[in-house]
Image (cartoon, rainbow, N blue to C red; front, side, top):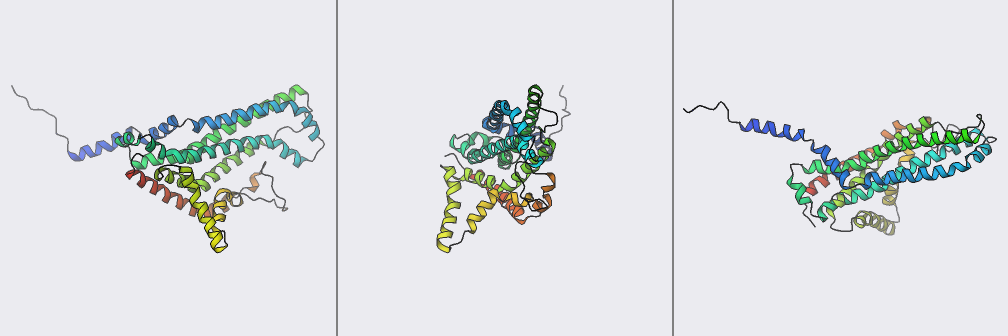
Length: 314
């Protein structure tokens, strides 16, 4: 006896509703970022190595701690604070600079590498859009590396503080001798400074990402030489340096906008210890250069997405 099936044929509208839900369940953005971390281990190995090397050097330098602490005991409190903050500030600077260099070279190879080894054919066959792929690559210098800087800097500075305290106790240094900077305040400044750098350098990373998707070879030269050539031509032809000043400002101009570089008495603030009172987030967020840079970064990102859609293996 024939029996009728109770199954109702799936309508096209139902199929369209199920497909996005199934795709979102696979979390393509999450796994795309994980893929970048799997394929580019230098993203976390280089900052980890920098932190390890600095901790080793700091541990060796502790041999001279008792002598230096006794020498600082008779000095003024402000220089003492700067001297005490120097090792912790240098640790944060080293990890930050390492992450910046890693971000530059990663961005230069992010889209170029998959074209060079022809893996772009495989990745394009997957149900992952070009927008998701490019955003996952852009998230490495803009999100992952800054978080990694903070995740390494805070434990490293705390370890340095604990080791310094142990050496101080074992060496018999007087309890009245200052031995540690206001570490919590320094970490807040590090968090603020890292956020400032990410926002300010976003156009640089997106420019490198665009060049990575366009150039067939020598991505570093294609990224660096055209801006420098334009600056040179401007200087030779018009005896002006607007382009050169713009490039310099995009690299180092964040400091003047994000920090008050002089205290209320007009004395320059030492970069090794910047008090919370010297932060200027309102002025930084209201800076036209910041928002122009972010608009340019968004445009470059959109261009990189469109470029990847039509690029083929090298």
